Image (tube, rainbow, N blue to C red):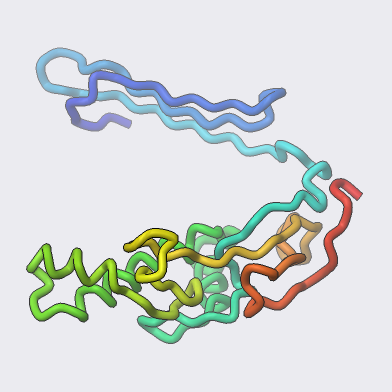
Length: 190
């Protein structure tokens, strides 16, 4: 596709070992005086790790297993994930919850001030936001530094799924005891 812009070219290219997954974006330098930029995107997905992903452990900041509700609509984490999957045909993403929470934080700050166009007042209100929403409790007054709210992650492992080939199972909730544990920690690739 072609797009207009003043970008004089950049290239972003990532390829995993063995060429199993390729994500690329190429932008050509402008041609002539009209600022035309050519873009090419290609995405080919193949299982990069296959069965080696079994029981790989990681942290998870949001998922449908979180027992929280939207401060905007009352929708649960599970309902948000289910709606995403129904609309996209794809598995939910961790970033869905954290991105959603940005709108919750913005709403809390905007409604805490008399004039949402008063930039200084909104900035001050952002640093005082303390609420519970789709990602759980977030308190920007406690830190670790003023103006920073920390989500509480859980430990998960990727396991063979029932709906999707691989699904997360909560194996450690020590930082977020509100989230139920769904299984015991298993050895990687077992």
